Image 1 (cartoon, rainbow, N blue to C red):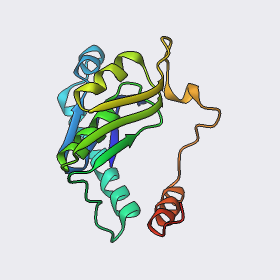
Image 2 (image 1 turned 30 degrees about the vertical axis):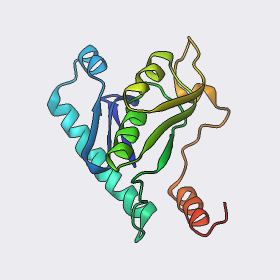
Image 3 (image 1 turned 120 degrees about the vertical axis):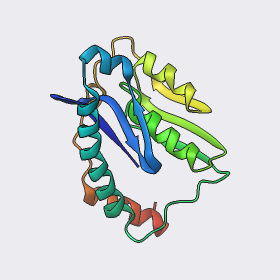
Length: 162
């Protein structure tokens, strides 16, 4: 699991991301451009680490993490804006020993998608529009997924109902 590190005052703008296993990806160009201090990044990361821990507990419960060693893993994101969240996910999966890591998304900003090759063995993104503003612009319904939705989907997958 991963969590976005949102810019101060612009929480949807990812200045970085954190992931399980201590993964931390920072978009230094954006951080410098917005003049965000290291102490502010650490403060944001501390808040998101607590939320990451909460979600791991809520979603995984008593189940062990999946064993990814020597497996082919597809990491999916709803969209690639800055790429930080996807890159954190890719790095966390690689650190778990996956044999091949594939990044997949329906839409992404061209430069951000291009940067994914640093962390993925393969990148599959259906659309990379030149005028990419935000991920939500590419969806008719971009409401957040609830904890209950995730828990229901995971329970169904564990029971072979998907």
